[in-house]
Length: 309
Image 1: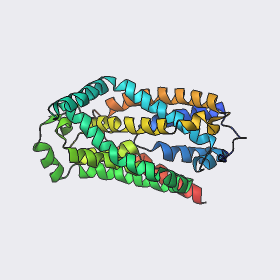
Image 2: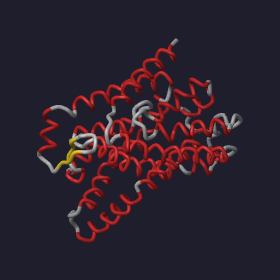
Image 3: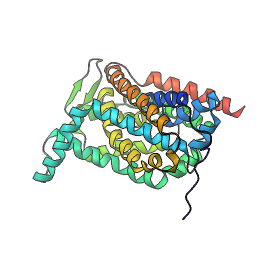
Image 4: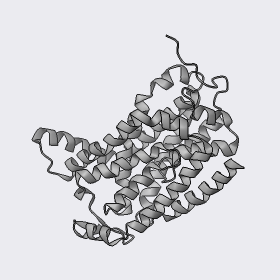
């Protein structure tokens, strides 16, 4: 049986490119501005055409590189939220023993499980096709603009009377920025499914995973801080599972000749991810998605024009 030949294996990723893309991945995967979209658009701006071709190829060294970056980002999130994950995992096994859900940690465990199922199924079935078709500069720029509009809509819709009534009908709190939100453990399973399903949008280059899930969480009455936390907790197993599922790209023919670059880029991505999640956690105690929405619309419109002329 013949194996696919990796695309552009004769033009390996440089260490400088590995560091730049690794830092970019670490920041944009967690900022609500789309890491996949930015990896396409920045490569276009810098003239790294071989990376663009590798991004949309069936098989290439660049796919192996991205696997390393995604695993590094997921590990950074695991380290930052390790106390939460320890309680969630303990809650999961406790719920299995008792065959019921009693505590907030047990509820969170099942919310995360239910919330990751939709994107897991859709990702397995369609991720390859969506990446090949839409991981192009113009498409990424258009979706980045749409991402900004989604963030704007989230901030506007969360102020509607229906959302305020939803918050008031559950146990709620006020954060340091006077942002009132329902307690995270009051989410129902169907709401966890709704928020988790928003991750599917991130399969389109330019749509942010964290942005779409934060907006979905805010529409169910969460404040910015809890919407961010739930978004990152949802994203961790999805990103890690996707990386592990494609680990053969690194160990196989796609990773040949670029494993050093994968290591360097992954270290850069892990460091950037950890710093970013710490910063965002503090930021959303008092701030909103609006600055990110403005950036996405401006950058998206500019890059759409840039790629078309």
